[in-house]
Length: 103
Image (tube, rainbow, N blue to C red; front, top):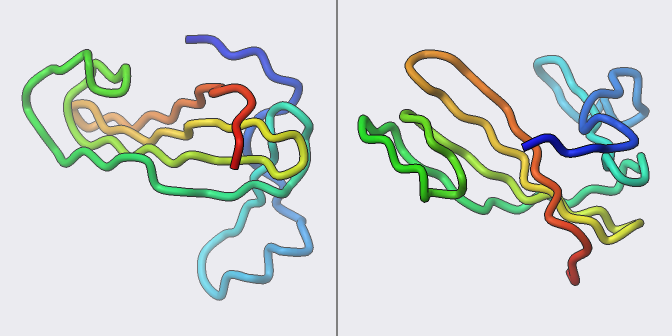
């Protein structure tokens, strides 16, 4: 699914908030709709490693692990599902626009 956005969800490496993390490399997420930084994460789903294909599970047709994080922008009220998946050893990320949401 191709989602047309004004901005890519992700990286702003030189943000003033990047010093919140004590280890690793920090990135600041931005809303694809308005470009603002005020995104609130909530866990939507975690599917453990599995061998069967199940195309009905959250629109994911691969095998392996799947983590979905719902991101809500407090500025424009858009929500996005940010997914990380593993299929046969390959890692993948996906962003789905969920439209306007009430928080």
